[in-house]
Image 1: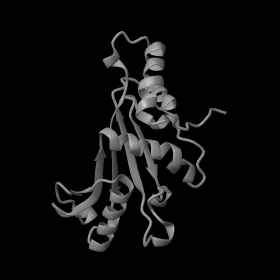
Image 2: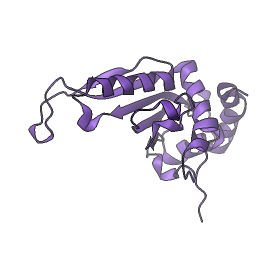
Image 3: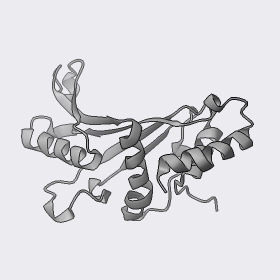
Image 4: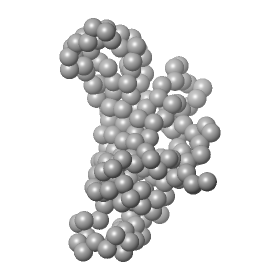
Length: 180
């Protein structure tokens, strides 16, 4: 079953009942997913930047943007306008497709994965998950990779509290750690 259909058929009614919302528009939903990679000390290596952008495009199916430094910081040897990262923002169908792939394929492929810590959901109900290796995604072939980089996945929701966010992600099928 597609994740969007599951959200409409199962998750929305369960959230409405649990938190007793009077209006359907008050039910938390996922707004956007943003993926970003900081390039760190490789800012001057054009081939590394292109490689990271290519990997992110393969993972998301969307062309990433190069994020640039807004001001110079001499301690970090960064000049204004230097590319310091690569980012993609997903919305709509691509967002739900990526989320389904994240839950069903990517999390099980992560080495030593024990579940997402519920503390990763902030007070506003948004979830941030970091990956140390981008090769956990199925589009990336491990034998074709020149250099491994990490990436950050931020999932923004309309949830107002931590409890609403955790419940939304749990009902969507996110594998949270169990308390011992």
